[in-house]
Image 1 (cartoon, rainbow, N blue to C red):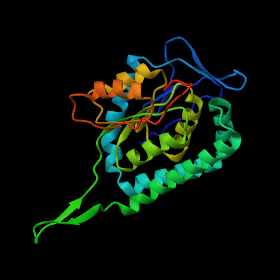
Image 2: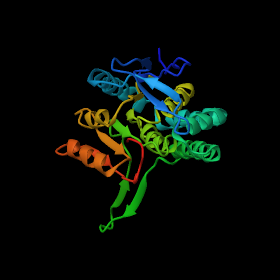
Image 3: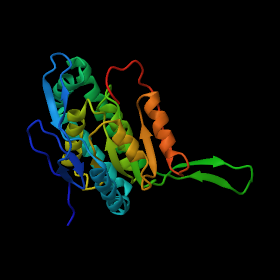
Image 4: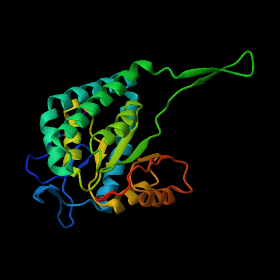
Length: 266
């Protein structure tokens, strides 16, 4: 029987999403705060190596079944995720404003853009034939096809805590990859809200795993041999560290470093 993600508790204590279950960490409590008044928005126990092992193992275990499901079925899951997020738009925007500090109109705009991102990638399921190009040989045609890498590590920043994760997770999921996601430590509540959206949309257990914690957890994740691809947006310093951890591997990496003069941690 297929198992889907389950919803976490409704208090402000967040948990890590591993293999479809919401799991507590063991370390000291960390918290995110409202930048306007410093009130606590969410608390959590940061992940350690043990939880990271479990998250990577869950992604590896779920990979084959998710790929075998087929791109049309995966696209339908993304379309449903867009619908669920649209239904929860007001609540997610309000949470983003409290935790990240955007104005409410800015947060609403980001939620709306994220809904569009999910719909866009869902529609690509009907355009999965690849591209063809002429060859220098008259009897040949060059054709490109997309194949999943395997387990992808996604590390995302605080400044667009919903849209950038969607930019990374939606195409990875559509093309049959599983994901271990480390969101920014300052916007974990928004990240958990997005994970709940994926849960409600029917993403199977282990396909998306979320670990919460500081940048050192992201560096440790990138270094795992089971990771086949890395997608990261954040500081130049962190990108250099992650590139060093990826050196000597055959994995594919994408490291846009667009965060400058930031006041929050990546």
